[in-house]
Structures are given as structure tokens and as C-alpha cells.
Amino acid sequence: MLFPVLVHKDPQSCFGVTIPDIPGCFTAGDSIDEAIRNVQEAVECHLQGATSVPQPSPIEKHLANPEYRDGIWVMVDIDFSFLRQKHRRINITVPADVLHTVDRLAKHRGLSRSALLVQAAKKFCETSREPV
Image 1 (tube, rainbow, N blue to C red):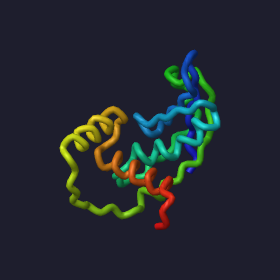
Image 2: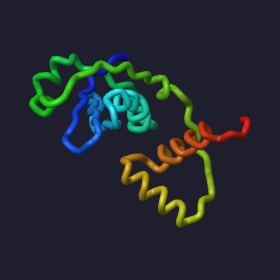
Image 3: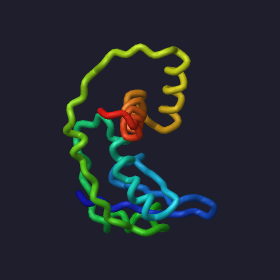
Image 4: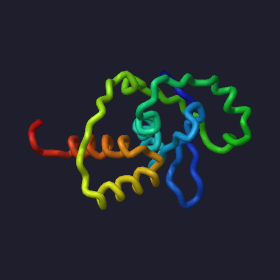
């Protein structure tokens, strides 16, 4: 589904992306291309556990908003199939100091504990050289 996103850049910063139709969801990248590529991952992290798919607004609605006057608009195709995945509750044992670190990092990134652990597990699986 195509969503309008705003790509912006402040001096001395990387390129930021705001997704107005998904409040609070944003990402960044060292280049415009990287920032746009990061939109899918940002949406997946932001909507982890959500039960409904947000709908895009007409871009004209956002063009009229002075909050979004600086930057360039790009239409990005966002795949929401991740919302249809079944989730399973599990019980794990974690050392208290590790859990404290996980909770602090999750809060810093605006994620739930579960979303951070899933993100870390996915990254570990992607980089693992062991056969799965």
C-alpha cells in the first residue's frame, strides 16, 4: 500500500523520514535511498502487535500542513503482511541485569521489550553462519 512519507534533512544530521499517517513512526539514513529503505523496518517495529492496518491519507492533506513544509514527499510501498502473522506467548528466563539493559534499550528506542527481543533475534538469525 502506497503511503506518503516526508524526507527531510537538517544541517549536520542524516536524512530523516516522517510517516504522517502512522503517528510517532519515523526513521533515518545516511542517504535518501537508505532512509527510504528503512521505512518498512520502522513500520514493522512501530506497529509490532497492532491488529489493524493504517490507511494512507491523500498527499494533499499533508501538503496543507505547515508542520510538513520542509522536505520532499515520496510515495513508499509498505507491506503490512507482518500484521497477519500469529504471535505466540513464551516464557523465558533472563538474568536480571540483561533484562534491565533490554528494558532500557527498548524504552530508548520506543519499542516494547518483546519487539526489541524479536528484532535482536531476527538480526542474529540473519547474520548467523550456522545452518538453520
